[in-house]
Image (cartoon, helix red, strand yellow):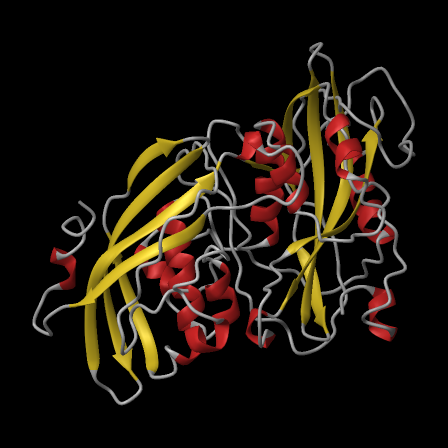
Amino acid sequence: MYLKKFKALPFLILILVAATLILAACGDNTATSAPATTAPATSAPAATATASPTTVVATTASAPTTVPTITVVPTGAPTTAPATTGGVTTAPATNTPSSSPANVSGNPIDVSKNQYVDDRTNPLEILRSFYNAINRKEYVRAYSYWESGASKLAPYADFEKGYADTAAVELYNAAVQGGAAAGTTYYAVPVSLKSTKTDGSSQVFGGCYVLRQPNPANFGAPPFTPMSIYQASVQQVKSGGDTVAIMNQSCKDLGASTENSFTIPPVPHTDAAVAASQFLDDRSTPEQEIRSFYNALNRKEYVRAYSYWDSNVKEVGPYQQFAEGYKNTEAVTLITGKAQSDAGAGQLNYRLPVAITAKQTDGSTKKYAGCYTLKLSQPALFGQPPFIPMHIVTANIKAVAANTDPASQPGQVCS
């Protein structure tokens, strides 16, 4: 794979996270031959979802078949903002101090607290979601982006304490590199960070994150494991230091080599995102989650599709029954209406009208219309892991006449 040490032994993890945390800085049965069932809502708490994610990027889930190595070549002109972090770093910076402040380097990623971003579509979106959670003080959610059992990942209580003095973090990335080994795609993302503390001081950090994603098509049964942060190496950049050099060196310290860069296209935010040619794993909004669900169905990634449902909803049925319900479905197109929302006790409830056209394996076409109900737990109310993301709790989907225009259906079924 991309990591030199993984080439010889894909599953041997010898690389310890230099800094696993920068403490203060840095399935329903719809669209098939049978309509979906209606499942009762659960009492899981939920949150303030804000605007749909804007800029940043996405990638496909298809992994290379070879075992390439990684190259890390940061791009983008440094800015002049000085910076600080509110937490421990893995090692002191190796650059020589001077009287000038350190610069961030790379392309800015929007991690503003004024939106809710919970997106695992690609490595940049995960890092965006991670620092969005930090800026929103949703630390259990931030912790959830780390791979369970990651080497050197601190206990949750220590992780949260590390951000006690952090007011805000800015994130910048350089070129994403990666490769694959044993059915898993690895990504290396060089980053720089500007962290501002509650006292107004700031610092710059440079480093590298490694993320990995098991091939979603390889899962034969739940649970589904999404892309997650695997390890990281981050350190403070001293005054006048070379941020780019530190970013490069951090990736090398994690085993990066010199091949294979990834082009990361923008994450789609339209119903066309359900196409099998895309990969979408985004729970930021009800629209994006339902699109992700149908994207998984179109890509035949049924365990991933099943994972968007609340695990406590019995009516969706056991996994094998769920997957069997789609065996005659070749492809699905989706039209979403306008989501309706209302707040409950510590949660947000969403109702999303949809129209679905399902092409069957025998060439026939079936049409459905209905309503999904989703819930989002209030992330700030979680006191400890695990974090519960937005999930589907009910679906009321019914067949409609073959000559019905699906576009006329959304908005009429969630009253």
